[in-house]
Amino acid sequence: MMKPNETAQGNDPGPSVVSTRKKHHTWWLPLAVLLIVAVLLSACSRGNDYGGDDDDDRPRPRQSTEQEKTTEYAHPVVETLDAKKYFEENATIVDIVEIEEADTMLSEAEAYSLLKDRGFLQSTPVYYDSNGSLFNAIEITDDSENKHPIYETSYVTADGLYWVIIIVNNTVMANPVSYNLQSGKPAATVVIEKDYTTSYDAVSQSFYNTIPSESLMITKQISFIDSETLEKLTMEEIAK
Image (cartoon, rainbow, N blue to C red):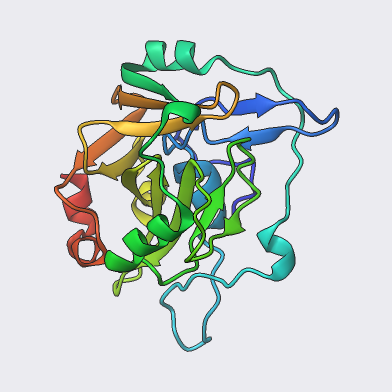
């Protein structure tokens, strides 16, 4: 299993936004889940961590313990990177929305309902707070009106392909973890519905809607992301 600060070989994880509020700790934010977030830091670090019967080779999401639900992981302190500058150099910025002005951000109840309607309750959904602690995932409550910038859950298809579903602001994206670990491509692939990806920068507390360069991320756009659609997306279909 990959450690939290490791990434799949050949994939650039992009910058990690850092807050140095604690002297000896660095809290990594998936530069807003430009998905090279969930792609390689969040999802892939847990992508091989499954539980299940010894007789069943199909991967299954492991149930988190009470301690793991609120565990923060420390990393060496690194220099804070400028999210806007990074995206200007590696993507086309569609717009930037400060979290205080993001009226489309979902509550826990809304995120839970969305994931339920799309067939993504195979694993318990979690959220990441606005301070951007990537490794402090907290399970959502299905009736809470509290709003958060990032929600995430995992899904395993009948063929054993592992996916991570991410909601950033109100943008739904899907990371084909199994495919990205095996594709050998220099950039990770992300399945999207909109014409752009959405990321969240914890330092400026802003959402970035961007069209990433292919050297940063390969996007595959489909009309709707739900469990039924992912069941039909084979490795070959993702690669097209």
